[in-house]
Length: 361
Image 1 (cartoon, rainbow, N blue to C red):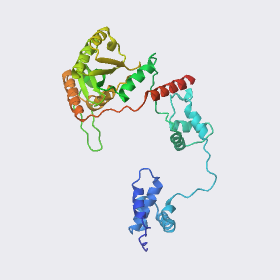
Image 2 (cartoon, rainbow, N blue to C red):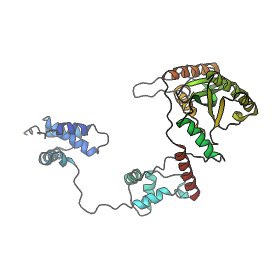
Image 3 (tube, rainbow, N blue to C red):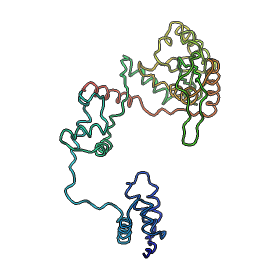
Image 4 (cartoon, one colour):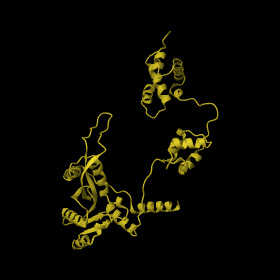
């Protein structure tokens, strides 16, 4: 049996074919045909090409011929004869936007479950079509988010006050965001962790020993992003907060100090108010109720949780506090200020729009 001559590729097709074989999103059939053409260009016999790509010799010959005739464009799927299937997208969308029937016993749809349900109802639709329609319309039944509307009667005034400090800080003054991250647990795993390996994530035991908790008080300087004061206490009462506030004031002496904090009761305690009255250079600014996300030190708390606490192993509270101090010292060497982008009007407009939408539903 004679061996076919090597296939001659058109200029530039070699690179395009190789790129296609490396694609993770191209249809499997297209990738398979690109491999056949590349192997044919290397001069491999058709039977050997078929063995490597899992096709018959006749199929390889057919695709070689199609490439020789039409080039890269000929490797695409030919349109099928007959009437294309009609997919009732509105039925898929309507069903997705409504909860599944009680008889199914589920809280939300999956693509396969909805496909089976619609097919049983006499409207055949494949899992792939449901998934495509969800992608096209941005429907994600598997996701759920939480929300909470602020009932603060001074909502607008507080938003404008805090956002004004972020976007247009007062001259010759320092703005800091303060808060406490309470109940940080010193957790010690019951066995040493297994380090990361190639194709294997780091592993740790699911159980642990508790060695106590601590509360981290931190003050983030808005202009620099640095943590300019920090303290760990066993509890977080008004006494601990006042001691920390004095530490913040000491870190920023002889300058007007604007402190952003949430509406936690200890921040408004009479002892705190009495001390503030004796120190008029310090002004407190409170975020609205249920809007602690406006306090930028919360961003730092998220960072330290992910990078130093959640995956740490601590044999004592002092060990935990030492790790927190080490992280903050290193963080201050590489930190950058967080940039607030939303204006007060944008926040209020969105909040009012979402509240109106929720009321209508």
